[in-house]
Length: 113
Image (cartoon, rainbow, N blue to C red):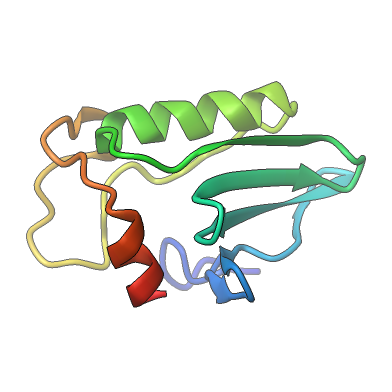
């Protein structure tokens, strides 16, 4: 799909347990990333049956960014995520540099979802 905006081609969809990218084509296979708010896990699955996950917990944005990039790398997916927030006014810094914000409140996340 042509890039209309930096991330419009990969929206997050509401699921029974949280949010998902839905199936995303990658080379000759596909993968999906699920934010499971009932188990508080980020889950990644490939069309080859490979799976990886990690706990959603209070860590910095920079640590989360590194962790997701490392995890998709273990699944042989070369990920490219634009590192600067673009959907919010006055973003403070790129994801990989943001060590100031580190909140994750499971109860608040569940209520919001």
